[in-house]
Amino acid sequence: MEFEESVNQIAAKVRDLKPTIETEEATKNAFIMPFIGTVLGYDVFNPNEVIPEFIADVGLKRGEKIDYALVHEGQVQILIECKKVGVPLSLENAGQLFRYFAVTDARIGVLTNGQVWNFYMDIDAPNKMDSKPFLVLDLLDVDETILPELKKLTKPAFDVESIANSAEELKYVGSLKRTVADEFRSPSDEFVKMLAAHVFEGQFRQSVMDKFRPLVEKALKRYLADQVNDRLKTALGADDVKIGSIPEGSDDPDAGDIEEEEAPEDSAIETTDEEIAGYRIVKAIACSVVDPSRIVMRDAKSYCAVLLDDNNRKPIVRLFFNSKQKYVGVFDENKNCERLPIDDLNGIYQYSEQIRDEVTRLTA
Image (cartoon, rainbow, N blue to C red; front, side):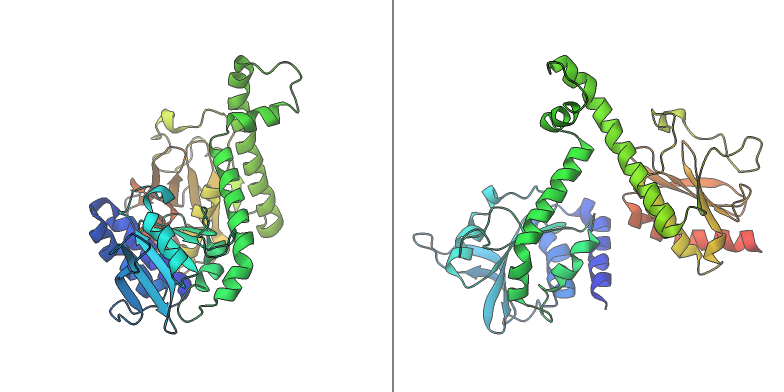
């Protein structure tokens, strides 16, 4: 199994089973042990490779246990402490991991709840685990750019020196990236004030903060949308992504069935990165049936229509991504559009059969 495929397999399992998992032990059985086996490549049933409830007495602390120790070439290299899925990860409730890291030969510490995996090293001080991870993997929001580094932690490719050489850059770039993402999602007072200072010269009172916060949020969203559209025009061409309302009087089924509250506050149509990514997934699914050059996305205020031959009478699927809950609109043989909820973009794949069936009907 390809490495990326193994990660996606566990991610799908987390997405499907997370609502039913209620204990730490269930989290270990459902998510953590499969990850250790399928992704990291260790035999979870071989105590020479995976030691559950690993004990290493620390000072006056006797009999404490770490959930798993992974052994590579006869030496403990990775320590894993587990929490129940959904529980926020913080070093305040990971004391054993800190202590065990200092008294064993392990160079990698892992704190996980089965969904989020935080990987730590001793970058700041030898034999003392850092307070911030050098690599963070969220299986419900996989950053594919970190997968090559994650692969270095697998049993077949384990290379602690290579990991150590790149860990510092990974740690700080990753932290900065997450900070930027947080600011774009919900700008802090400091960030709003910093940007506003470039365009506002008066005294920065609370009333000014209240005025500029929504303006900064809107500016950030528009900047991202512009960057996405520019990148698409440069790298992919813009012929298959069109922006504009579905023409009135078209035979596009259910053209008027969208609830007004789902339309964005801003009257301008903004094609988001998620909408583009969702369209690309649909295109990848449909290309097994039809030439992908015939598949086009037309973005409107309330939804994105993925069309065959840029024809409003030939809708393949609709993407409703403008509200907190995302939906995929799939069509049946009678052109009825059913909106089906998805948790993330990977949820589109579960409707692959319906998408292909619709393309087949449209090309018959």
